[in-house]
Amino acid sequence: MLNDAHCHFFSHQFFSRLADQRGGGASATDLLRELQWTDPGAPEALADRWAAELDTHGITRAALIASVPGDEESVAAAVRRLPARFVGFFMLDPAAPDAVARTRRAFSELALRTLCLFPAMNGVPLDDPRVEQVVAEAATHEGAAIFVHCGVLSVGVRRKLGLPSRFDIRLGDPLAVSRLALRHPATPFIVPHFGAGLLREALMAADVAANLHLDTSSSNSWIRYTPGLTLESVFRAALGAVGASRLLFGTDSSFFPRGWQRPVHEQQRAIVASLGIGAADEALIFGGNFDRLFRPTP
Image 1: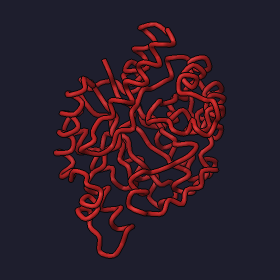
Image 2 (image 1 turned 180 degrees about the horizontal axis):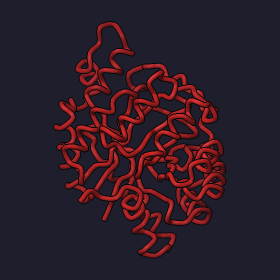
Image 3 (image 1 turned 45 degrees about the vertical axis):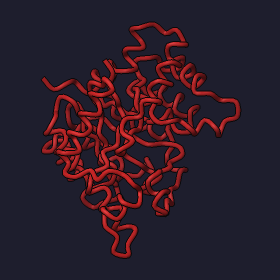
């Protein structure tokens, strides 16, 4: 069994939002042509494309992340299409006046499972009362989880399109996530990319809060900020600090025609195997923990 806890759902609505930010009359089609990426079409069509891609690589289930605030409907359509394959995540700006209502609707009406916060992008500190309000709302929903991006934040598609990314990375502190996690101990929290450059803080936070999980997704190129650090040593440190039961494998796959990022899986699988942790713990990282947090739909 192999599950991917971190895939972005780049819907047509996602590209339309980027086109609005580009201005000058640009359309989603214009941006896709410039990027030389496949037009995602309707959310249901993109869901089918992702399902076929998962089948090709032997992946059982995947998290799909609505990658711009306000795109909950696109991922919800994909989940409705194939509820046994996909778990819906949605990005939220807690500064939006309807943030709490959006959170409530996403969990109750749209059957999404994870609230995603990007404090560096939205400019809202994690100790802001507006964050606490949306987190508290999410925590009232059975089976809900909260994903918080910490550390360095780089959005490749924005860079390719020349869109400014004025992110305040000071706001993405895993230690602040631990505070939220301790206030809501029954709700799983997920920090992606091992903290994206704040490994020490992510491990400290996860050690303090037993409901805080780390995902392994992306190339983890942030390791270049620590001379001598390797991905193997990152895995070893994470396993030593929090154990296999709180690590979630992910790739950070996003667009087509590139599709699912098999090299990420191959590299991480080889590293985990080299650490000799045993088949049971390896199975937790690459699928079991995901199924425990997001129980499969019958």
